[in-house]
Length: 465
Image 1 (spheres, rainbow, N blue to C red):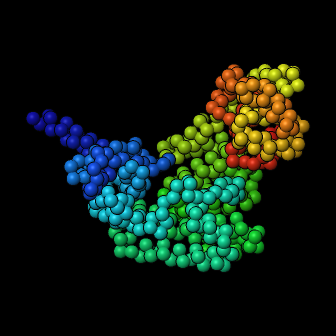
Image 2: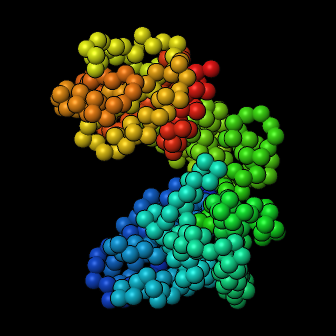
Image 3: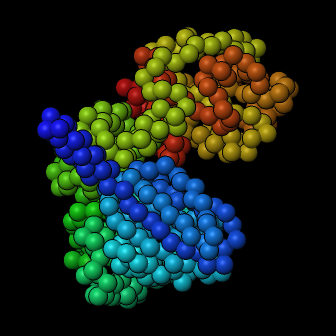
């Protein structure tokens, strides 16, 4: 008997260690007046650690689920097209009492995660969750920043003093949440998250306003003084905290008097001022921004990031943009092709070796294609002689292609491929418009998706040096 006791204790100890590592969050609840059979528990985009779960609804509207997570995070309880956002921490217990007739309003929370989620819903009453369709996007410092409809409207309407007063009123309502008795009962992780969101709001609003409307109002960020301050957050799970961190980082990092690209400068600035997990988010966004603007240094930064944060939840998004959204892998040799030109001659990519080549796949029936070609027309004239512009038509017939080119008077070298040409497969064409840049060494460069025509030509001229 005695020889087996150590084995039993080891087994029990191992089970306890495994259970401690998993730390599942337990969610139980009841949805009154619900006659459906299923609801869904959905992880937060990018950072969610668990897979989407379909939960069975039992008699009386009862349901339950265990969610294995290793870090605090947001999640969503979904009934049809209605969503209830939740905050979960490892090992927490959350009880949800809801009514299908009111959902997602009127939900009551219990368990040790109750205060977190009650406060979260109170915050969302002040700042209702919005989809990308409820936002406006503006480029600030070359990066597209989103604004909820309410803030966007007031930024357009108000002068600086009036806007600052509006922000102050919103900030006062936000800070009332930090004085709530529930705040003291909430988990440390949620207190950090909520405080970061509340503190970020005025800085994000005022810095955005100064950078967007500074010329109109004859102001700078310094006009708002200490209201725009260096954000020091331990966590950044919410919308305003994330956006303010990134905006302030680009604002401060861009002014660094050091050699290198904007992405490299901002990467260095963020690394000097922040630690994980905030740093993981910031660096990933800086790299993504650089990649989309054709900054070649960003690919070296990606390798540094992957080595530094191999388990980062943001790494998957980085890799998706690198290896899926770029359409063709950066650094690979550009596939050669030979096609007929508008002048009846044949042209091959290889004959332009030693030059930078801009390739634009398009079709006459594609309105976005024509808009892009219109915007690029002036840019073509401003490009270096060492930059070649090729357009490749996938029109069904040559006659339509020829008529469109001659009618619109586009510059450059125009080639015809048709719908089923080999070149379409070589470049993994999924649709049009699709554009590529070939460097002087014959390899593909990242294409700056968010840049305008002038920015693209600036990049092409730089690559031609």
